[in-house]
Image (tube, rainbow, N blue to C red; front, side):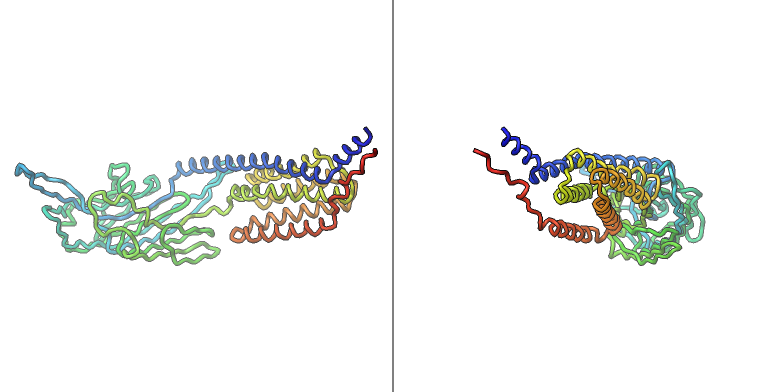
Length: 443
């Protein structure tokens, strides 16, 4: 009976058994870690939803597709019964040259704890049309009925009367009455004096407008030669689309210029009706990047929860082996819960303050809590100080990794390699079998 009790006592003190229990606790704590990640996703989704509501009241992101010269023509086809069938079509002609000068005025709008980037802009478009001698079989082109089409993704962004001139003559721009045309939501300019009476002419145009939108502004290079210049007081522009600009960035803002030839784009010079359903493959523009995306940083930090729990438990485990000071699994569990709580604190505080300050507050709070609890277990200041130092180094390491986006994987891998090497070094002299050897049972 006494031998069985000794075996049970030895088993309860087994290093292997304790290691298995710690490993199981580490895996179990992944569950609240995953729950924290779900909370981050939920808050991020709510942020996107709220920002969308703000943008909807202002104006969504803008894509400018302008201008196109549309010319009606009538096609006659002889039917089997010798009757003539007439069909109405539209010929669409792109500009010979297109120049767009845009000045952006970004601003931040807040709704509670959420923030979005809005902008106002002054746009000056100019260029030329060349009306070549176009022939279409069995058709009559009605040059005297030609009109200009300009496309926008959100007409609510136009905040003043559009000033449009053809050959320096002003004309009014009106909505097309079509909710969504091939160019987007359209404005039409229809010269009432039959300016386009014949082909083989060259016409200049100029259009000035005030356009507001949110997040980004995009352009479509309709001209055979398209030059777009965008400048604005924003220090974190992102350039999107299939064309790269020549750009400069300073403390005052950014300046970007695109020069695109018709060889570079997949838009025909002339097409009929609405055969061009989309120009999105050729769009380009500027995205006003929100540099403080704390939800993304929170998600990245939460993915390191397993590493923090595992390494902290390893430190506790080594201290337990070296000092013979027994640590109960419940105490491991409480420390693990405190480590998981860090990510919840970080999320909630970063919604109110900057991410860096939130990280400092959350890490100091959790390190302080674990330090006080550890001292009550070890009753030893050097051991407590060692654990506190290790936690501080871990949280500093994580913050550095979060800031180094481009080389985060490299730095993280090197850091984990070094940590593993340290663990192997300090565990090299541990006799893993000594405490598990059981005395021979007495006969």
